[in-house]
Amino acid sequence: MNPLQKIGAFTAALAAAFGTAFAVGTAFGPVGQDTTAAGHTESHGPDPAESPPAGDLLPAGLQVSQDGYSLDLETTALPAGRKSTLRFVVRDADGDPVTRYRTAHGKQLHLILASRELTTYRHLHPVRAADGTWSTPVDLPAAGGYRVFADFLPAGGSEGLTLGSDLTVTGPYRASEPPAPAATTTVDGYTVALKGTLAAGGESDLAFTVRRDGRPVTDLEPYLGAYGHLVALRAGDLAYLHVHPHEEAEGDRTSGPGVSFAATAPSAGTYRLFLDFKVDGTVRTAAFTVRAGTQAAPGTGTGTHEETPHEDTSHGH
Image 1 (cartoon, helix red, strand yellow):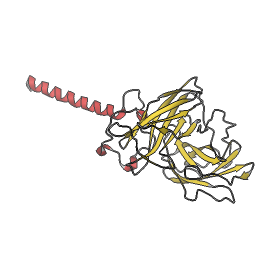
Image 2 (cartoon, helix red, strand yellow; image 1 turned 90 degrees about the horizontal axis):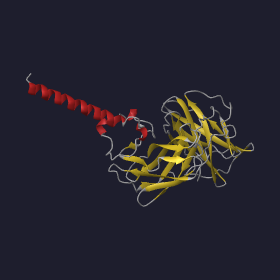
Image 3 (cartoon, rainbow, N blue to C red; image 1 turned 135 degrees about the vertical axis):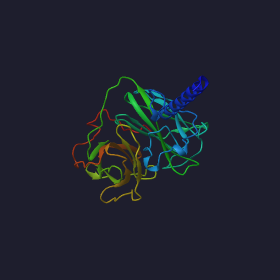
């Protein structure tokens, strides 16, 4: 091989190596950056040829971009224990703010905030400005890492999306853990009982009943189109489970207001369930810890707010 041929071969190898490095960097993001919340880039969406098979799709909430839409947090840090404003934009494949949505469960967009330990939870309904910027007041009690979920249905889409991004809450940090699995929990004097368990890799039925002073609560009020709204998150990566209420969600008012859902757990592990229910015009949240693939002994322990002083599932409406 003459010198010119050697130089040409070396140049081609260098170009191939650089191309491979660029592809890997694009797939995994910059070093030290959380690829599940990489921030907004002017991406034109994933290449369909490179998309994983339907059975290998990630659970909801783990990606900042999906199907040509991206969650762009304008507020990436908030102070603990102080009311602040959280702002964000949903962008389309061209990087433009999305301004047209379809209504789902009574709202154009549902915003969920959860601490990494899953001890603090918020379900908020922000307001959208004409330029597509969403904003909402929020007061988060504890410092640490949080996950922000935007659950919405674009005007031109046929299915809803749940995008996730990371939020930092500044201040003195103290580690906390969610309560152990239990069949009941108490919030503001209401005792909520859970019947059913999550089955790893399949759909499970979950039923909740609400009592006060030992008597069934028979005057639950509709909230977001049903008598309860359930959010389920997987501990560790905070995957957002697919949950939908059964049509018979009004329940049997003679034996207690049964609110039932179908939930799909993508894997075995620990999950947190957050049930929103409304009584006398006030929305409350009952939180449960469950383990997919195992049977929890009914009535063992309680995940009450009194026993978990660092747990905060208030709505902050």
